[in-house]
Amino acid sequence: MVFSMVFDSNGALARIPAEQRLNVYALVIYIPDPLGRFLDDLRKDLVPACNPHAHVSVLPPRPLSVESVIAGDQVHECAAGWLPFEITLGEICIFPVTNVIYIELAQGAPEMYRMHDAMNMRALAFQEPFAYHPHITVAQELAEADVAAAAERAKELWANYTGPRTFRAERTAFVQNTLVNCWIDLAEYSLGAVTV
Image (cartoon, rainbow, N blue to C red; front, side, top):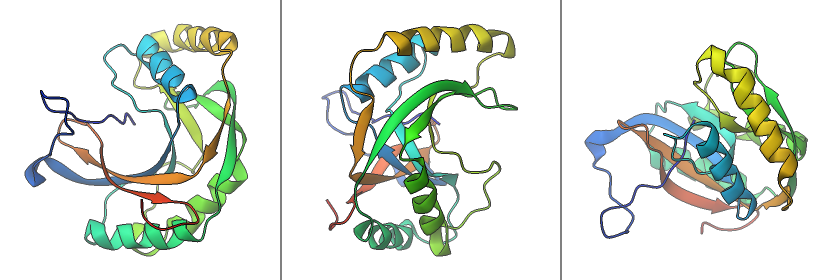
């Protein structure tokens, strides 16, 4: 899943017409800079055509059977009762079957599992095709022959990164996909607080 902001020619956030929006939503925690910037650069190094926005998914992509505002109300309700927590990134790994290259969570995974379970119900309920596993994707949809080399490159760049590997999860973003596979932010919710 690649998340990016859509801007118009003047640098302002673009409005995406309703007819270009898909019934595909996700809930993510964006990773702040400088770690987020490094992860975006890492992903662009491995998949140059990608336009990423580093994140960890609370709820992977799913269709909704209700209006997005109803689902957003549920996110708000749950987020307001959830205290911020620390996430520390661990090692580079590869998911079997999909060959997605990702960074494991060394700290914060138990909180992510609990948040996922608390959110994946009622309006947001969805039977996901893979068991939920919180992570940060660094490369996906690579040719099988390119996966091993890309994983080695990711491990090398990650080993040489000297910045912070921990960030505080304080907000979630409710996002929607579009026909051009560009995700747009619908709303942001602070953990343990009111809507931002």
